Image (cartoon, rainbow, N blue to C red; front, top):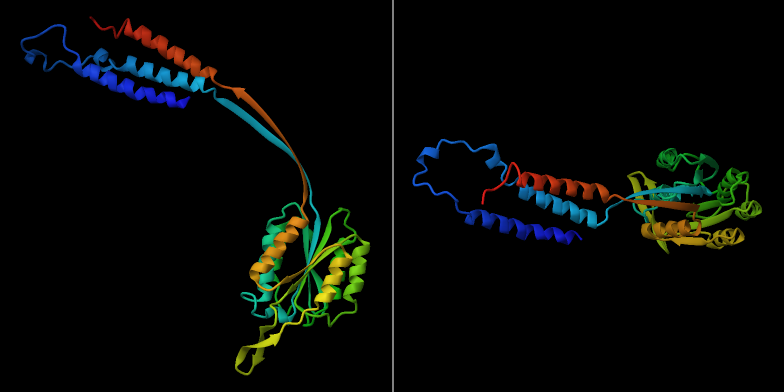
Length: 320
């Protein structure tokens, strides 16, 4: 309907040309005596009638277009899940097959994952030769992300206690009352420390209904590992050794999946897949209410037309 407003253009052109062709009804032989006569208010307002008519037409077009006001609101009821992230911080996580290294890449992608799940309680366990809880389950993700930034190699004695890390994460989840309980275990090595076997920790997780997604990080074949020498830190290619059969067994026992990440992009894709597999349950009810609001535009147009008619036949009347 708003295309009708284009009709105003030819109407203005017609009005201007008509004004240019108008000739006086009374002819004067000399206008010198009228040179200092100021324009009256009536002369200044001579275009008001036309302008009012055009504005009234525009308002009528808007009214015909049937404008509406919309009120919209929604009720959202969400039930997040509980996720514990178990992160290996052993010395081998400084290998440079990921950029800048495995540990920093794992932290960066995990933070992206956390940012995309605002309704979940998420916590963090770190492990090497021992394990401890860096952050318990929380919905305050800004605090969790800050604690992620603080994670670094050397916080605890070096080694790889996968079973201890998994058991600590299970301990944080076992009393959770929510139906969805998940552990994301990321490591790049073989269990060589700790008093709890990884499979034993997986059996405990299974008993509490916890899904354990396992991620092995490391390229296939050789990777550059940092080595301290008298000349500073040097990188030396060493064979990547991940206990994939054990990680697959943990995932299968708990009804989850095992993933192998060989670079930053692959690790990011793995977290995206886990995000899809463990979606937060959300129920949304939307309500819409629409009200017609054409009446004010129609009334304004009518008032303008009445005012235009009155001015044309009184104050701004043109003598034939």
